[in-house]
Image (cartoon, rainbow, N blue to C red):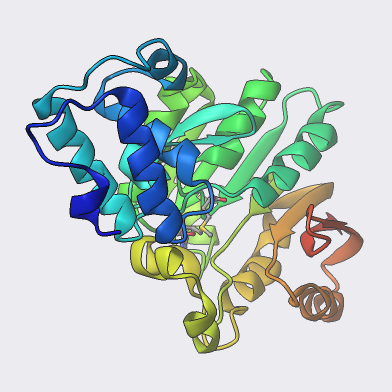
Length: 299
Ligand SMILES: C[S@@+](CC[C@H](N)C(=O)[O-])C[C@H]1O[C@@H](n2cnc3c(N)ncnc32)[C@H](O)[C@@H]1O
């Protein structure tokens, strides 16, 4: 079925139900896993409502103007653009985050870092934290929402990403405790952070190997920012930089939490072991059983 067939001719009467059914069929054919859900979410967006809203107007006709808006959204999705970018939002740690193509779409596996960090800082009176490569700010904003004594420095090399991070911090009313700074993790940190010390440093840095670019899904490769994905030939350049530089900025007994890619954990643990500035405490697997979050303690 082509897109033209999926959203039928302008003169017919099209109800919400009929449009959803047609579009779901089109998305299914295009390989969209959640084809019906996404058809509903996009139509809700075109109609200025939410999913519950469209159920209340299931048999109502959709105007030609609204169908034109919907058609554009469906077209973008059909071309592979992730729905989070089309809608401009993504849920993470039960909070809604603004996203744009300047930031990586927050992933469920990154919620592990948030959950662990919240536990680490529970007993600290005024926890100070740093997020290296903050993107949308999903990690610091979620942590700050769960600890009202904490403060966060959210660092990223991309000014456009920092703008999204600031937007999310104000949306969730934690902006007074989050400082978003322009920062390059590959350059010396001292000049960029001066003598600040943190109880916890977290990072979900870019970790895809350039040599594995061809293995990425099309929607990731064509739509997500390459600067948020790739990290040198073996994918470990940025992780190595964090392991090398972060310990100097962690208080004694403080923690470093790093998200790693599939098959990277043992190499990173071994690298950190050789450096001796931190000890590996544990590794947490994601729901697919992949070692995902490495926890180190400053010695
Ligand atoms: C994998 S994304 C993670 C974003 C966010 N923390 C998350 O978990 O969704 C990595 C982030 O690192 C940033 N980044 C890439 N190179 C960087 C560098 N040299 N210094 C600082 N940040 C960098 C990217 O702009 C991107 O926002």
